Length: 264
Image (cartoon, rainbow, N blue to C red; front, side, top):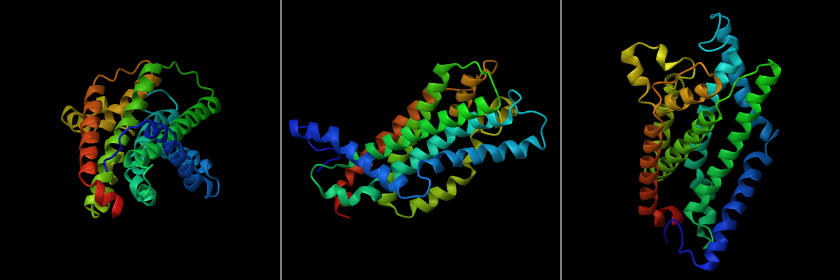
C-alpha cells in the first residue's frame, strides 16, 4: 500500500469523498465536543493580540508602523498563528486517523489533506474575523494590497503543511522528536518579526532573522496592510522553495514507512 492507492474509477470517487468525510469527523471531534467550539479558535488570537497591544502600549508611544498597536501586532501574529496551527494539525494527522487507515478507502494522503484543509479554512476565517474586528472597532481605513496579503497567507499555509508533513514522518519514526521540536519551537515567536520590523535591526542581525522563513511571511503581510512599508528583505521564492523541499522530504519519509504507519 502506498500513500495513495491506484486511482481506478472507484478510487477517484473515494478520493473525492473520503477527505470530505474526514473533515466532517475532524470538525466534530476538534470543535464539536468542546465548550465554545470555534469560538475558542477566534478568542485565542484575540487574547494574544490584546495582550501584546496592552504591554507594548505601556512602554512605547507608537508601534513600528502606523499608530494602532492592535492592528500592527495582528498583522504579524495572525500569519504566524496560521502556520503554527496548520503545522501542528498536519503533524498529528496520522495519530488522529490511524484506526481509519486500515480501511481500503482511506489512505495516508486522505488523512493529511483533511487535517490541512480544515486547519487552513479555520485559520483563514479566524484571521479575517480578527482583522475585520480591529478595523471596525478602531474605525481604521487601511489601504490594502490584496496580492501581498493573499501571498503571505498562502505561504504561511504552505509552510505549515510542509513542516507538518515532515514532522508527521519524524514523529512516527522517532517518537522523541515531538518533544525536541516543542523545545526548539519556543523561541520561534521572538525571531519571526512579529514584534518588530527586520529592517529596523542592525545589519548583522537582519541576515539571521531572515533565515527564518516566517520573518518573510510576517513582513509580506505587513506590506499588504501598510502601503508605506517596503519589505525589501522579503524573498517569497525562498519560502516557497523551502516549503517544497520539506514537503517532499516528508512525503518520501512517510512512503518509506507506510506499512509501519498503518499497522503500528
